[in-house]
Image (cartoon, rainbow, N blue to C red; front, side, top):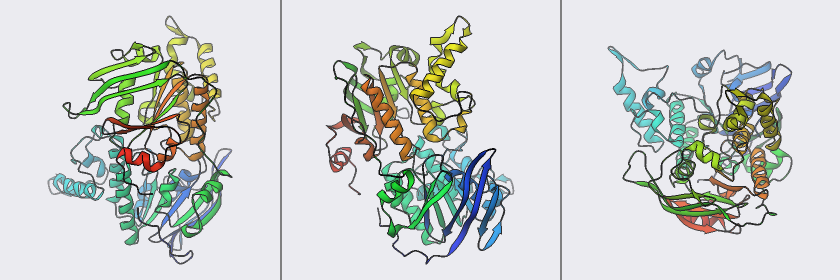
Length: 513
């Protein structure tokens, strides 16, 4: 990746400012007098844990919400945005962290939704298709614009979200976790787009929990904690340690492999498993793969996007069929069982996309936590509310969910706490093996630490833990073993003392750091 800008602080034109911005929701003060500047043709990165106020501030700057007090200043004049359309008309656009695409519509229709191109006979679909294909190619994607969004993988959907924002002629572009589902190659393409945009004078506001990655494009850093700005600095004045210290108060790591449980009998045995590509059944996305995980062991599966990590975990959990091999759970072949039957046998999956596959957004925290364990407190046709409450209270306590209670709306929680609810839901089924696909996707460094400490704690009690990741640093968190996948096969296995370059070489990734 190319080096960040080294121009000194204070030399760039300010185009947008927040001045003493306060935002309250009832008795909760989300923002406490925030003030910072956005510079023309520069990347301003907002760092902060979940709940620090980053998204609230971005919603105010993009017209989603209005401040309780304070001012937003654009080109030296105080402005009040009544809506996102109002902000967009003034050149400010936002790419939200959670996807806001219509899965039943095509890529093209999503890109032009609400601002269709008109021809004398109606919508100019030909011109929309041409522009859609051009912006997708700019992002390195050979996606047919007429493809339904539902047929795309998560990373591709994220790029469609980005493409939609690029089609608007924005002077200021806010990116909230734009790389959370992207591969290393896709991130590099996006960073190239960012560099091109800033060279043309477009200002970028960037939010990411991938700290090292964010520092690659940052010109100015702004750190929020508990609704207040704790520090601002130019890129030339900071490093990763500075960012972490400003965010959480001290140096931070993701933990170490758990000890205290004697690794004995295999809990999970994967023997020669193959999984077919949904779009091309003659091709295998997982090819004759074998893996063994013992009770109390933590195994990390590392690989680039497309390596087959997600397909493997989903096949083990029963979400997609295997085309060959066996899946043994405590010695019993479960490959022919349904998802519910595998859960009952002691196998649970925390999916990659918690919003789509892990949570029911219309339910409460408690209802989400108890959903997978309903059988344990249903008597006849009735649900034992006392039994359900016990499961919910235990789940909130055991996975350390920060919430007002089981009756709180799931949407009221931060991303990290939502992820802990998904993990708690699986743990409520008392699994022997838990599979986690990108368990830290979209959560901050503090929440990552909490999630990994939780998994280490459960492993000490004898739970077999398998988690996949595309982040190198997470391989060195709590794993006893690191398994590297590439093109559907295991290419290497390492202990926790492996070097980064060895993992990257085994995955086929070029060394870029």
